[in-house]
Image (cartoon, rainbow, N blue to C red):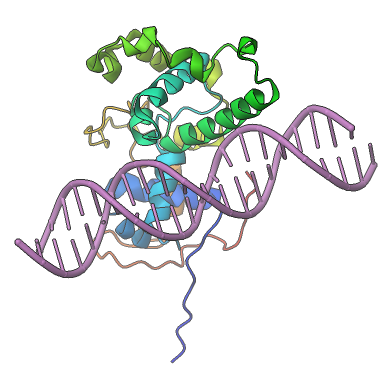
Length: 237
DNA sequence: AATCGCCTCAACCGCTATACC
DNA sequence: CGGTATAGCGGTTGAGGCGAT
């Protein structure tokens, strides 16, 4: 017997995959990622699905450049906590640990290069430097933990965010489509980090792709992956 | 116009922590 | 209480974009 075993997909996600994942997460919630991976029909590992969701598909994610406010916050929190990215991310609503980690990496590389170039201490020209906040971080270091937890004006101002901060992003469109009529709160609310702008359920357009008849049944969690997604379409986005 | 090098960011990997049985 | 499954975290890598030469 020759079982054609499909290999688990790796690499960049396609738009279709995103939609599949979003739908499945909407249905089953943000847990049991292995299960979600299976049920969604995605040829991905649960881990991969989770990562994609957390870093990219989660509603409420901010996209675009870090604001100066966020930059400062990251610097200060990093000075305080070190590489506890997820912890830092919790203080920056809409930002992921991955994003912050990446930001820090490039930021620090830049700083290191700068420092190499001009070893003289008098030449700290940039507006925000690591050193500048480390010794006496008055702005946030003085803030109580609770304030950091969401009460701080710093945080709230970030939360308010300027719309300009966010790029018109593909996911916005997806979420627009997904925007559900009912206000069912899908989010379990245990995490205060994200206040989802959309508390969506399944979008009608999505059901075009995902009607149970089309591919799979809810009650028997057996996937028929032959939903008519064309395989190998590689939407460039 | 072509090439090179740098930067950014999405995604993977391995390990640890936590939950569940 | 121990074993197993699952989730989460931090480090690392690689592809693509973009500006400089």
